[in-house]
Length: 353
Image (tube, rainbow, N blue to C red; front, top):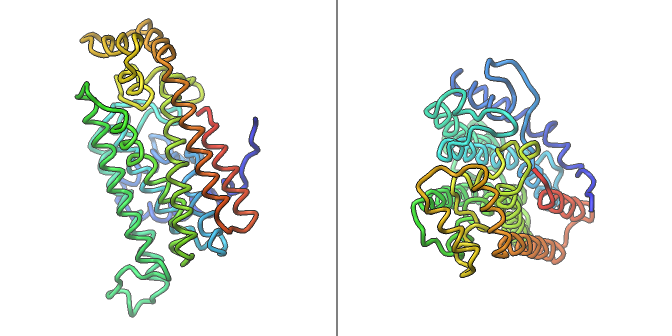
C-alpha cells in the first residue's frame, strides 16, 4: 500500500530548520561548517545546499504539541532539540562504525576527519539543550534568566529531564552495540534491549517532548511515549532489514553493509541464536578471520532467509507498529493529529530508505 506524504513533514523546513540554522550561528566557524555539512545545509566547501534529513523526529515533536491542543509552533523547541540530539548520535555513530556514506554522500568524518566529526556532534548536543533553555529564557524574562532552573512553561523542566534521560539511553544502546561486535554470545533479548535504547528511546522522546512542553495531561504524554517506543522498535527493525537487503541507491549505504561489518543487528542475532543449520553456518562465516567478499554477503543473506530470521524480523516490525497504533487509538486526540500520527507511523515503517 502506498502512503501519501504526511503534511506535517512539510512543516519541518519552515518551522524547525530556520531555528536550527540560527543555533548553528552560535558555534565557532570550524564546528559550524562540519555540523552544517552533516545536516546537509552546505557542501564540503561551505556552499549552500538543500537539507538532507528526513525530518521524522521533529515532525513527531510538532505533532506532539498539537496533541496537547497547541499549535505546532509551540513544539518547535522540542522538535529542534530531538533533531539535534539525533544528529549528534549520527555523527558519532558514523565514526564508530567507520561508515563512509550517509544520505548518498561522504560522511562528515570521511571529509573532515574523526576528531572534527566528534566535536561537531558534541556541539549539536549542546545546541539541543540551548533550544530548550531558550524557551525557558523567553518565558521567564531577562530578570529571571540567571536563576533559570529549567522551568520554561508547564512541563519545561520535565522536557529537559526527558531529553537527558533518553539521550543517556541512546548512549547506553550505542555502547552495547559496540560491545556486541566483540562478543559471540549475544542473546536476542540483549539485542532487542539495545535497539530499544539506541533508537526507540529518542523516538519516544520525540513523541512526548512537545506535549511535555505544552503541559499536556500525564495520560496523554504517557500514551504518546508508549506509541513512540513501539514506533521506534518497528522503525529499527525495518532499518536492520534495510542494512542487509536495502538497495544502495535508496539507502545511501553499500549493499549488505551490516553483514560486511559483521554487525549484531536483530535479524542477525535471531539467526545466530536460532539453533538452525543456516544459523550455525552464518556463525561460522562471521567467525572467519578474512574480509567478507561479495559472494560471502550473498551467502549470508541466503542463510538469514533460510533460518527464518528475515520473516521473523518483518513480523516483529509489523507487530510493534500495530501496538503503536493501538496506543494512539486509546488516546483522546484531535482527529487531525491522530490521523497525521498514523500516516507518519505507516510512512516511516514502510520505508525503503
